[in-house]
Length: 229
Image 1 (cartoon, rainbow, N blue to C red):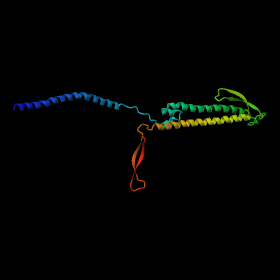
Image 2: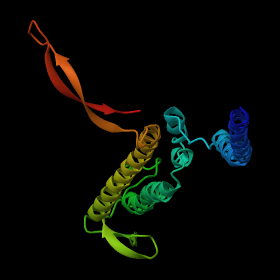
Image 3: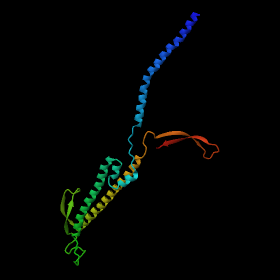
Image 4: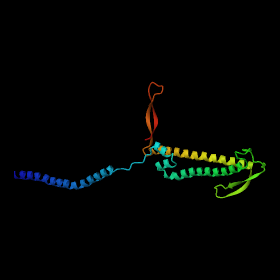
């Protein structure tokens, strides 16, 4: 009887010791949980941090600002295009200026062969005493107008020079207008391209599809799907 009672007491005390160890382990486990909680808080703070928004130009605004040479490129933040626009447009205007002054030189020489006095009876005709071989002095400039010289020229030579530089002046004006128009179109197209999503989410995949063109029952097939966001 005494032996049975002592075994029962020993059986009751043994789980209590193990339970104490389990409780201690659980208490010590609190320290391992704390770093995980801190990591979650840091991750939440990082996800809640404000992100810089990507610049998305408005094509209409870019087109309106492009009426000022280079304005559309500045709005689109394509600053590297500004030298191209200004050099091309400025070069066209400078070519127009050079051709204009050369045209004026030959025009003045050509006019000197005619009587332009409105009170004269010979008004509008070649001056009396001048022959087809008669010459007048014309100023001839080099390509960039850095040097010039005065040379004799007949009336026909003055007329050909006048017409030649007038055509070049008109051509330079057309080129300048073309460059100006092209800069406006470029600003509009660049603004549209910047609104496209070029991220890694663009994908091409194959999906199943049921076709039923002229059949009573649908037939299985495949299709290619290209996602554009």
